[in-house]
Length: 202
Image (cartoon, rainbow, N blue to C red; front, side, top):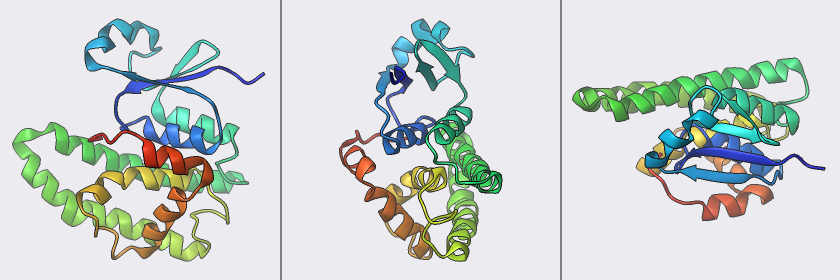
């Protein structure tokens, strides 16, 4: 019998979207619980470390978004075929998370927002995209690792989402990433979810 799975997060993509993408790609049936900010204090005791997202599996809750993503990717064969594959994917995950921290910082630091945004658009984002595009070029398959979709493509799809929304031409210099995003959008198990999901700022 399949476990009962519930993903709890605010009504946005943020730190939960990678896990949602993994679960959809794996064909896992799960309850996608969206929490209003006003309701979070009352729900907080249910979270092991008092944070979101958390994942419930048969009633037991687990925290830490990157740990949850790795767990789901391992369980559903989206982490490559070898330990070296998994290590390569972890590198991409870590790089993407560093970029996410920069994205979040822009949203939080009102007094420095203009300068942080400038650094992000002119320096940090291009450096990240150039590295990732090169990795795709070197693998020659359209995928980061081997010749099948892994968590790596889902990470890249998620982390570039806001950038593509803000500037549709942002990937013009990074054709391998642009092609990879189209490949993710064409996945049978992701197509409907990506087309119909609610549009949120983050």
